[in-house]
Image 1 (cartoon, one colour):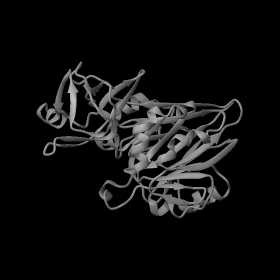
Image 2: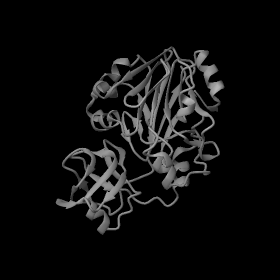
Image 3: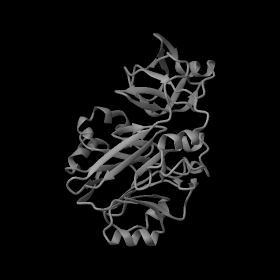
Length: 328
């Protein structure tokens, strides 16, 4: 596996030569790429070897080498459960979805109950735009099979590996449950917004609770999913309407706690990542980029797009997702 920034001409030549890849970059660049075995998504934020950066003149390409077979497929919100229908034996799948789309919402809310998705490594990310262009530019993904832009849908790159190869996927979440230790939050309905929460058995207006308790909303809510820490990040607190918006859906019946503060964002990431990132596929969250002030700060050897959501079977927030392939 090879990660590198390429010009449009260089990436086009690789695609024309039959390379299998995922591509991240500015929409104007991605629209210039030819058809082939690739999928892409819009992002202009990246984690590079020298630190976080905004890059608009090149595309970030991850080339999957020593591939036995690869296929690009596209799903809409109603057929997300059929993603697993493209799984190739002994392989893995990368999926990209545009932020704020119906498919984004459907995947976020329903993927945990789509059991078939968990039968093979599934990673990916939610495409975005420059934060100055929110509301004016559309997050897009690209179906490389026909070189078309997709405003609402999921593009999947299904990859089969040679016999004996192994795929390892993992997440790096620097947050632990711990702020106001022991205080748990539950919600009665799933969704990207909530008006009420049950705090230690008492129903409260969640916006008022966060405001009155001076909660730092840069800290996510953290749930324990069978030993894996899963974040739900706060997008906005609207005290006028008494509602809280999230970047991922809260789920009923799940116990959440506020994350413990992290004093050194970049350093903590580097310590958790180690030096194994060269040759691995990865993506990192835009909230980590912003709150950790990662622009210009190196977090180790993991390079890749900065995204509006990360996928490791389900939608994640403030998390780094990584995938590694070990040859036979």
